[in-house]
Image (cartoon, rainbow, N blue to C red; front, side, top):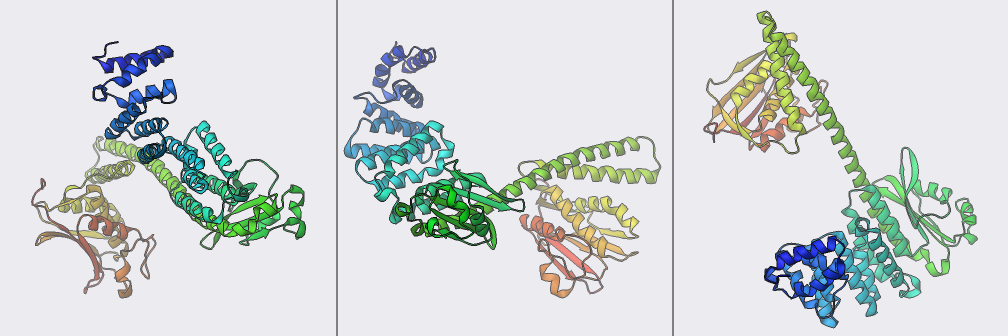
Length: 549
């Protein structure tokens, strides 16, 4: 191999490794490690090759692994840096080893879960060797939620280390002093989860470990009934149905020694071989969303009653986390359905636009052509709005001619106005009135205001539409000649979902949408009852000097 080209040597070594020639690669590693680190183009690749071949650091090469780890860290490759510091720590002792493990932990904090778990296990082993069992327990618990993201082998190693550690804890149990910080860590981890199943799995494992029970289960309840969604460890006899029913009704059930309590809630457990049972409801507000169930065989060793506070703490945190996760899942499902509906609606609009354009080419009468023009303009505008709704991000604001927007909205609604025996009186400048905003949202805002005015205006009367400049603003005004808005409701009409007293059918969403659009554009909006009758809505947006501003 040519030492003047260490990167070529590294490429050759990887090719040899891929072809199964590991002895050749192992022989080349010392020369690669002895190369000047600045000459190695990809320190991460060298570390990966080193780990793949040796599985540990050879004597005397820990310093080289540390140097490569620092280069990986400088390059932003935190995963490789954490692995390098761990390799270097394997050849170090005492304070130096502790320093390298601390650097590995700091690097892993920004990397993948597998690296954080590996570093935590190394730190925990050191703590066990130093007989600092509580510290080791805290370290392992800090990455407990990461186990669902690592390989089965890594997770099994973690559980094995955890089981070994528990042998050193007093009475085989986690002490109350050690349980409290673990509960805090689990509660914080639950708050970050967005998957209800992951939340329940974490809670079942935490109850099993913190309370040191033989079995821990999480039961969820909804309109379809109750079901066990997580259990640790898996298997075993069925749960006590009477105890669960009482718990899901909001009652905490605790039986310290079933042999001394033969009530209806516990008779069904006598044949299960367990001694203690604790079942705590999960309350989300005033609603019972589930229960946490735990049982144990050795009541003298477990003293389950001493840990009721821990189960209550987890039940409260789990109920909030499950409620939030379910709400998010429902929201995601609603968004998915809305996107599917929008996609199908876009296809229908395309078909309607095509049909109207085809009819226009058949030499219709002037009145028919006018109606077809309105249909084409309306379906095209709706198609653009639906397309924007399907996009991952809203379009950027652009210069919009508010006078042209008013004309377009009037044209799109003129057939509706005529059908109701009403009309629009439009007064806009001949020259453009430029503002900045999202074109389709401003069009929808104008249509919302005009539709409201048509709904409340009396038959035979006009709806006044007015656009003009006022100082540095462009003002848009819509006035109907209906009954107006009750004075006490005026301050709330722009609240989403609010409907004024005597309001006609609707959902109260239109004016809230208009307010959001105008305020996002840096404008303001208001409503008042006109002295001549009816209500007038005005909004103002900052004027742009030209369309390129």
